[in-house]
Amino acid sequence: MFLLQVVYCGELIAPAPAWVSYVPQARIVGPTVRSLPTRLEDGRRVDPGTLERLCRELPDQPRMLILNYSNNPTGTTSSPAELAALAAIASRAGVIILSDEICGELCYTGAHSSVATLYPEGTILSNGLSKWCGAGGWRLGTFVFPSSLRWLLDAMAVVASETYTTTSAPIQYAAVKAFRGDSQRALPVESASHPRGARPRERGETASGRAAARGARGGGFYLFPDLGQHRAALSHRGILTASALTTRLLEETGVAVLPGSAFGQDESELSVRIAHVDFDGLRALAALGREAPD
Image 1 (cartoon, helix red, strand yellow):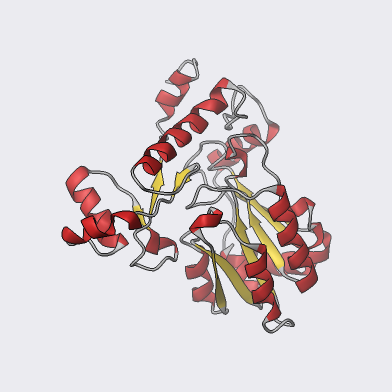
Image 2 (cartoon, helix red, strand yellow):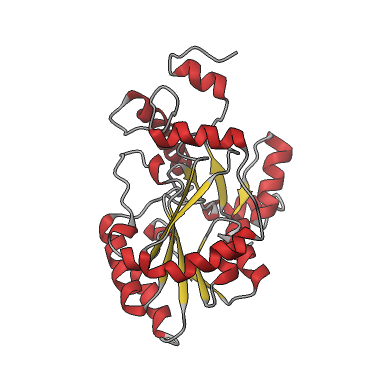
């Protein structure tokens, strides 16, 4: 993604909140970064009307929208209707969409839809192994370009050839197994109707329900609750910002979460990102009824 921003000359549109690397990478390279605000009432999803209003400003300005779903940090995803509306606006305005779908296969219902099917000529599809394979740290990413954006792919390939060489051999071997779909090797999250797929869904629903019962709003694979309802009580304890809240949580309870400000939110918003995942591979294999490796 960083190399794509190196070669693309245009404005980057990043919804807020957004994954922590999007905006800093763009600022290193130097293009204009436009924040696209989202609302808690809309599940923090990108509102098509907001995108359309932004595109009306300087309509000839080249733009790229980063669209991440299922979303990190909010845990929400976009419906086919929402994606269709976004695709129509992007197509009319000539906006390139970088569709980061690395968490797409973690959709609990198994009904993930890609905007690339609705706007194929203007969508770059980004994915990778680490999330859907439960392979945290195994960083092999993939980009799929449409033929209409071959000029951008070629430019990125030139810069890539001067930036890195290859992926490590162990990750390549793991990727071969994963992409072949060998059910005895790869362990993707399956549909909610399958017992193994139900586990992460139930964990997410439980965590989200508990948060909501305490006045925190949010949900999904990740949680991004807003604790604004508790502002007065937290203020009495000297907690006025999201960073202060996460520091006190760690010091007093041993629970580590990230402040909303790490994802582009204002420090005064008492939002935090919670991940309810456990990458303990031995326990995961035991839970699946499989023999743990030596």
